[in-house]
Amino acid sequence: MNVNSANLNHTRKPKIFNQPERFIEGWYWVIPSKKLRVGEVKPVTILGRELVIYRGEDKQAVILDAYCPHFGAHLGEGTVEGNEIRCFFHHWKFDSEGFCVEIPCLEEPVKVKAKSWPTAEQYGLIWVWTGETPQQPLPFIPELEMEESDSALSARFITNCHPNVFMINAIDAQHFNTVHKLLSEFNFEKQELNENAITFTNTTHSTPDYWLMKLIRSFYKKPVNYHLCYWYGMTGMITISLDFLQFHLIFASRLIEAGRAEIMTILMTKKRLGIFGRLHNHLVLWLSKFVAEDFIKDDNKIFQTIQFNLKSPIDLDQPIIQFIDHLERQKALKWGTWYIDRMNDGEVREIEKRPKREKWHDELVND
Image (tube, rainbow, N blue to C red; front, side, top):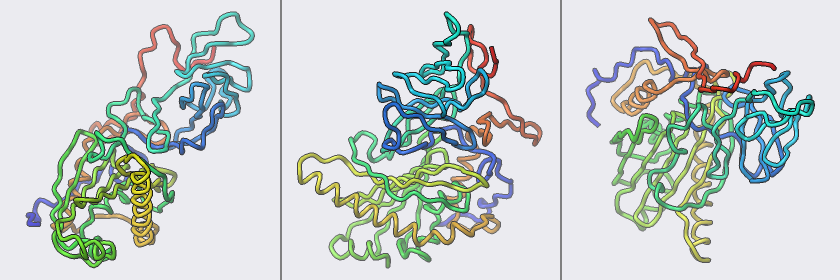
């Protein structure tokens, strides 16, 4: 790759990238779907905000702010009734949108609302959108966007670095060769799918030293395509493509305390019917798990000790700088509050996003 080094100066301090107090408004994973049964409620803390998640009789997952808007009792101590949740303390009941629908000591409930959050389920996980209304679909692998797919959850692990730093590992061209012996040609092509998603593609024609590539090259001589799609800077989707086989891996990360990352690995493949199709998919998912765990094992010690600071970029670091620039143009939220961060004259101001409630009181008002 021939890039003018003058274009690689990235001297401005990022306002979002690798910042432990900020993240992009978007979809983030909460818990595995199988961990939440019908009629069950659980407390969760996501991106510093305390929430409760429950599953009603309709089998839909619901996410609300953790504390009752009356006295502040934790709704995680409550019980699920039908598709609603009842606070343990004064038995106020709230529906799946957070509206108070019953107060035992009153004939009609007061007009108060617990904060609710958009929720979805995909890839064996429950996801939450960290804003009022989802602006994008759930993260998807572009190659499988129009296909039905099979998925399986794999390794879940914590790194001692920010999720953004973990994510750029997949476009760090140098480490592919030095650590994994995977690629000998580096020519990442960038494309922005939308304001929250960016892709990088590389094609290699030679024979790297990585064991899997050596095995493939023993019977497959055509180019091997490597494709990566990032969503919100914290969910990375990797596809390794041959004519007859594709490996799809999703690394869904979220920011946790002290600027670290908690990462869930998801294995994906195109859905195939029939007994041979199912056997094929079991084999592909098993091989994908083996490849993912092999990569994680090799890189894990770096993730536990790295203190990222890109002071001396070279031509091969261009994709990393493009990723950082893409991230810096997105909507930043504040860790813990999920308020919007706005920059005025270099000073950060937190702005709470308040929906139009008309007849409904603010959710923090105690009636």
